[in-house]
Image (cartoon, rainbow, N blue to C red; front, side, top):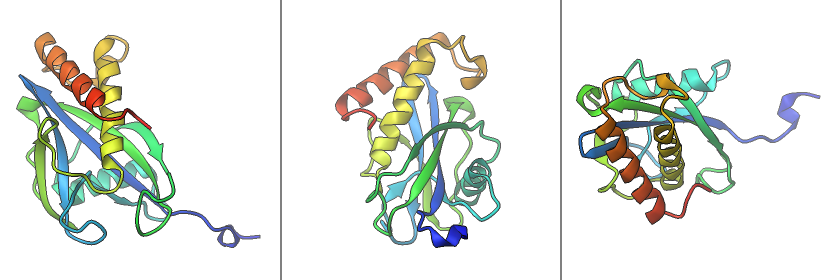
Length: 183
């Protein structure tokens, strides 16, 4: 028997890139240039190529769609509920990256992204796919990292002050409380 004898969902990789500092917490989104959800905002990401690791696909898609390189990616979670993508059952490995507001990279749209832009988590557009749920999970993870930053000192940018961390934690907590929580 061949692997092709078994129906299986396609695999994608997405990146939630957060920038924090001062009194703001921002997330990088791209405006989709193609269906589904053409014109809607989503995380940078796309399909994993045959022979490509999901993390490599996430880095490639981030660079292709935003021209951003060198983000420290940490696997957040895998999302695979049927119906999350109107094209069919698609499974996505999602990665989280955090940067400081003062050093956040400039985003420039490329590939199939019509625009790339940093958005305040307090003022987001409607998100495509299940990306509102994905963001809720990412902010919960950020909040847990901020609660114990010494457990993984490489997980947060060095240039952040204690005040930045407290502000970001409060914003993440507010967002998570307003949403329904990580599914």
